[in-house]
Image (cartoon, rainbow, N blue to C red; front, side):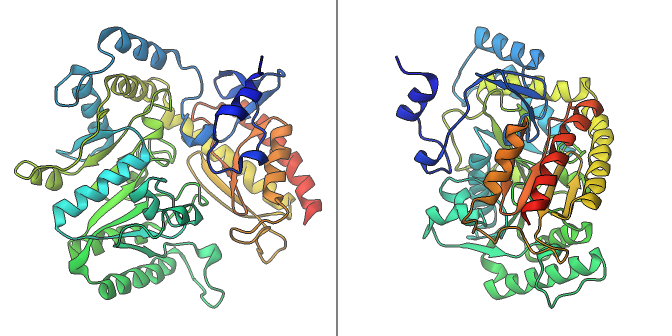
Length: 439
């Protein structure tokens, strides 16, 4: 009889991996911010799995809502109105703060971005789609072409019309570019973007996509002036502004949605992950008043078998209630400050730690070789698998997270306590001492 791991190797294909190179752990239990393997080892879940389990593992109220909906109506065609669909859409719109918005529900973040592409094209009658380098929007056909890092290579050549632009990343800006302050950063990157708009032809550009706060590519937090400037450019050239909040949404940055930190209102907002914390899949597009009203008289060419799945909607309602019941916004403010203080103290201690970027409970640490900030590994090039070894060292000590290029992401469940966070970061401190000796 095959073991769980043997059967996994025989029948499962794992994402983003050469199959012979992986050795997945067998997980037997998960609760709160922890999970356990089949050898009894406990791990701090310091990335909330895929930055989606914002309320941790085993939330009883979400689980009960799922059970109740399965007992009632587990599935019904999207063509029909159900109480759970109406209530879920209302809860999402109210959380967004966007007046007279509506929701088109999907099954995941990539599907949300796919449908946002189509809505923008239909609404504007234009066909080019701008998206940022150093972003991730999904791996499906359209979302994969939006993605601005090596994971989109497998989607190429892909359909025409996808254009990449440089978003703010002052720490890795060209060496000859010197910035005085954040406004200077914003002005520089806005000028680059407007030049591209003009040369690509505003009359052909349907949408500008951006991760409001870039997630897996390094928690890149834009200057407020930049994101407001993008809003102004979209207004100036009749372009739809799409904020991808799949990872940054649902209190990860402190606000329910990351765009709320910057005082702007997008035209479309894509979401998934934290809306159900992964308990069941669901995502969606929040559609602003001007665009949803366009579809009053124009057929919306979007559809999915599992659009507004009743069980997903029930989980979303319960999850949004749990964010309020658990005072998550307040906890993120407290624990986010604590995490920031700990990271800044560790940076003073460890030469391997370069720039730290953080907002709410969303942080990335650049690992560097020297005081000049030379990245520990080159872009998309880590022949000795140094980052893999570092993540492995953290895992061996009971600290689970992931890396991208030379960066380590720390994004724990939003329910984490000060005691849990402090204890987990002692592990990070210990492993960084080993990394110091590696550089």
